[in-house]
Amino acid sequence: MIITKTPFRMSFFGGGTDLKEFYEENGGAVISSTFDKYCYVTVRHLPRFFDYTNQVTYSRIERTKGVDDIEHPMVKNAMKLLDMHELVITYDADLPARTGLGTSSSFAVGLLNAFHSLKGKKKDKRTLADEAIHVERVMCNEAGGLQDQIAASFGGLNRIDFTSDGYVVTPINISEERKEKLNGNLMLFFTGFSRFSAEIQSDTKKNIGDKTKTLIEMKNMVDNVQVILEDESKDLDDFGRLLDKTWKLKRSTGSKISTGSIDEIYERAIKAGALGGKLLGAGGGGFMLFYVTDDKKEAVKNELSELLYVPFNFENEGTSVIYDAPEKFDLED
Image 1 (cartoon, one colour):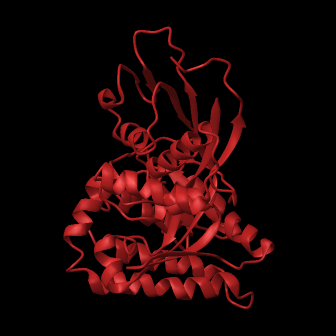
Image 2 (image 1 turned 135 degrees about the vertical axis):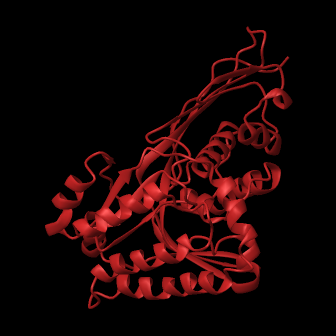
């Protein structure tokens, strides 16, 4: 039996520039971090006592006689990619799916990590990210960028650059004290809305040609943010002010990114003292992140009291195997 633990991510700057339709022509760059909320994937072989050969448990339970009969597209295609059979697969998570935290990509990375480990192989983080990208974007044909799979696999606070030649992951060179201050000034709230990011990403892709100038501006902000994070002499609060700017830019790149309710929540938080914020992920609903100085935190929390406040801490590990135990039965005929 194998159990993997894979973090979710929050994307701060550059989201949308990791779409292939944009970065192959213009280059792309994002700054994101993983944090201490995880998905857990358990995989083991199914003993041959049952009238089905695979069991997959997520929001429902599937029992099938073959891989092709599995309805969950991620599971089916990941099993095909690595030639996996006769499995019991269980998914569990600290936070709900379809909420802007890259949950589907974290699942893909954790699932592939578990499959390789069940075969007795250890794969590096780049291989796991690349395979997850292939499963989601090629085999499942789901619209979207590439940052989520990379963040979930590598872990940490990183800058990720995209070109037609591939991607480069560069850890942000920030002191632990400054990183803790950044972490402390970020407040995460659950709006209660959920959506399929692929649908919103498809809408955004259609508009890329018209929004190239805006996306280039969002990409260029990544350079400024990296300086703010790494240079101790810079005002860290500028991170929050730029969050406000990048959110306003992102809202203009697709009609489905925000809603009236999201806009109303955002304005209330700003009036209560938040310097900036954004809806995490492709848009439409889920989690909202705000940058708030210590003296305004209580006011913001009180103003958004109807929302669930979710404390968190940054994490650095990325996907990992947390349990690896040999199985006690022989699968050979």
